[in-house]
Image (cartoon, rainbow, N blue to C red; front, side, top):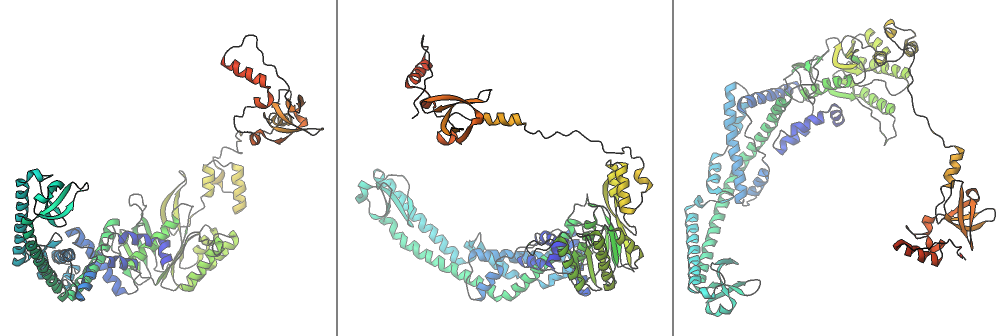
Length: 638
């Protein structure tokens, strides 16, 4: 079923649906939702969806909450544990949502619906809620939780004030000894900042010192006598807080069974209201349910497509018609049409509203689909092999209560054999008594559907003038081929159209060559490939030699170095031991390129110039040398 859900895109519907649920239980229930096979249960599910949507429209969103961690808190108290103030505060908020949900459903009773009566199964435990909200506030035990706690916290504040007053008085009376003018807390003690050199002037205990060591933080003896009193008060406060938390935890444990029931009811309501929210999102309609093998959709839509751009689908099958063969051009909407029918049927059987103005949908025992390429590279199956494997699996599972959809029946192989296989598949589907929708391009299959009882043709409309599909399904008419219409509109010459028509049908229809102006294709200019001429090849080779290349001279087979590159006559100069020679490039063969012998920007004058010429060149580069001329001398290369 998971594969079928993916093919029909019901998995995407579920993803959208889960986003509308607040509890983890409801999300899990949505994930595991399957088509219902009980008529009584399905009608109840659809009634819940419809009533949930009505209440949402009349009363707004329900006061549901996530309920995360609440079950974990119940486990703690059932084991005798104590909840923290934060945990109790969360529990209190949950109890508030129970009470508000009960009141919300009470308001819904005014609309004469059955769903609001679920409120009778919710016990908001108002006494426990009041105890928690009175005693816990802002994540801690409130001062007014008990008279004793209020007194203790008042005594703690007074003790701290006295300690602060004593410390401030000590600072004022010993200003010269202080490094600052205010007291501070160090390790839970109120201390005064005393300069290191005056530490013996102040009676008290050193609690800390500054990073430089120049300031000591001393708790004065006058302050210290209150510290022990303060600690005792805080210990009493902690004990009282713990007593209050244990009391509230015990009350929660006593009510844990009722809380469990409330949580289950809230989760169920979350699931039901998520269906209503989903219906509002895609403007769904409650379908009529039948067991007479009849499907009718008026203004049907694919729920994942924008309503403003989706062409409404008018569809009906049953009442003597079990199979529909849909034909039409590619991208004409055939696949979307059959998926729209199957998806809406699956949604209805899962208790959801359908995307249609009106719908009458039969219950199906299973949904069987063969759509898409289906090529399985890991198992080395071709498209056709995977297609046939899937079809055979469908034929094994199909029965009289099945809904079958198949796209491009018999495609992926030789057209003649594919047509035969397509008709054989249709025969088996007809024998099963199932409802089935198939798409095809084979004209023989259209003819089969015209003759076969219980099977009808249908076509997707196409505008022959604009060459655009209209995405409208017309049941009872076979679709004609649009390939010749498209080819004609796009300017295919008459002789080509005639050849194509004779090859396909053995004859040429009059409309095919009417108003066709061109009898042959007008050729357009295209650039030619330019080959390298022989002379250019030689010139390219001549120019390939670079200064410093190591070359071999033939036929003497002497090694040399290029000292002047090739001139316009194809002659280059090569440095040999003790001399430089001019030689035609045809007698020279590259041994090692200069780029492999020398670093980049290498000064070749080191090799080819005399020491005197190099010195003179450097001088002439700096300033003019009257009467001086650089003579090219042979360099001893040995």
